[in-house]
Amino acid sequence: MKTLTKLAATQRDYIPVLETVYIKDNQAMATDLDIFIYDSAPEGVESGLYHAPGFDKGMRLKADIPAADYPGLFDLGAELGHMNVSRATMDELAWVGVAQSTEETRYYLNGICFHENYAIATDGHRLHRVAFAAPWPVNPRFDRGMIVPRVAFKYVMDRVKEKKPETVTNRYRDWE
Image (cartoon, rainbow, N blue to C red; front, side, top):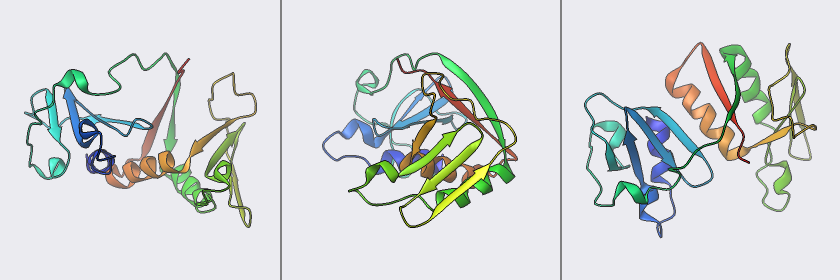
């Protein structure tokens, strides 16, 4: 829940609904309109919108914004598949992630490229690459692989640190 509320708490101030956590059917969701994070809701919390600051610490204040105004309440597309990733693999990805660029002028280097069974990142000065035993499942339309943006990767790694799982399930969706 800490990563979910962090995403909701760092929103654009001109869209107050983004500074909330949406609870429905024992699921919690936060978004910044680019990234959507889902988690299981804490026990005993009823459906609705809650202010994000303090939500993970038990300060659950309902927002006075109607839940229907929450963005992203649409079909998220067909699931293409999922892959369970071991803790060791996530550690290797963390090493690759160190080479991601933070420059805004060369935005195309701000991520990790997954191509076949490789994960590659560079900032133009250093390049980190790791090979995996099996290829990553990616959308067939992206025959040259896919790039996961640095910000999205940061939130995935935050969730891994928060939950400390033995395996992480990554889900891939078709947005078309």
